[in-house]
Image (cartoon, rainbow, N blue to C red; front, top):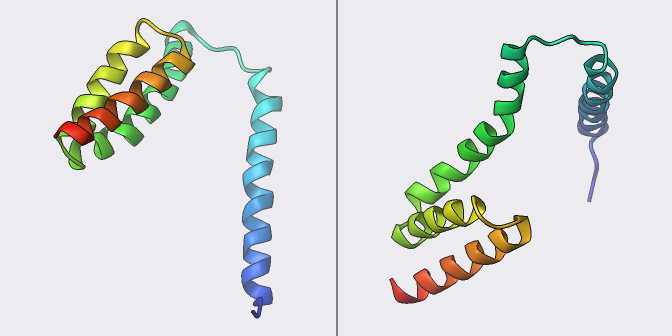
Amino acid sequence: MNVDPTTLLAIFAMAVVTYGTRIAGLFVADRLVLSDRAKAAFDAIPPAVLVAVVAPTALTTGWAEAMATAITAFAALRLPLLGTVVVGVVSVVLLRAVL
């Protein structure tokens, strides 16, 4: 297996830039003074990203996955994370077996 030096350099450069932005974010975040509206916007980012990742898969793969997503979302309102994951896995397995 041959490793092209240009490819290796590109991968290394992307890693440096990625980690650089993450580290810079840690230093800058402490110094920012956010308004209530900006804080609410930042608090809304994680659930929005989660929905953006899960929704296309849940809605395009089949009825079992869509129903399991709804069951898991309901369980997430009432259970801790580990319980939600267990409910999600069990529900998709059972629904795939039935449907």
